[in-house]
Image 1 (cartoon, rainbow, N blue to C red):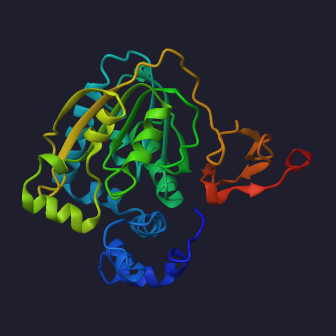
Image 2: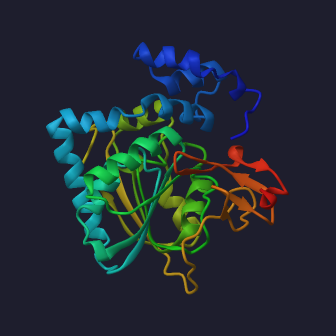
Length: 307
């Protein structure tokens, strides 16, 4: 992502010190940037990079957390049941602890094509390794990407789901939901903060942290079919209750999952170890086997096919 005059004030070295002092990085960034409502995307990326590995470590040492994650995965997988051979995308995969739990509750022939992305390349790296270890080598196409500009084709996944990925993006809910809906062919399944179903204390906490709200209202205002809206009965944090929102799209025309440029949607082809959009003249690097498909990662190189 390109720096704005505000986000250029963020120093990763300074934020590392904030994190090591057990302070809230996103809150620090808000105060530094003078923004009390919205978490800037650059701040979220820094925070996620600093947190890398913490979720996997907690899975190793906290039996209660591990049990809740397994239950969470089982319940989400049960929603996928109508799709017998599904293409699946998790948007905002983090360290893949939820994705692994979901996939382990699905038969191999029900999840033959799986994609997942996160804003933080480092989280995707450790998450891809964790996923391979925990799922006995089940296949997943991991990449770094943005919720607001998803580097995937329209109508290309039977199931798109999130697990508190929209959460820190108050103020950007509409753009994110419309992107998630764009790449969905069948069902869009959101497990996110239950702002409208929460009590006043929980709402106050969500507002303080800049958590999302109004997802159901956005879906209905866009004319989408909401088939389920309810509290989700596995809470990772009792002060942050979750809701389940299921949106049915059932697109008449479906595309195969494929990477596209997050800038203007040009088809990406693999060439010389990276991804290239001939239409846009942009190259997206592949680091450690993980495509880096964010707008800020794009390199203008119109003669790249000569390499």
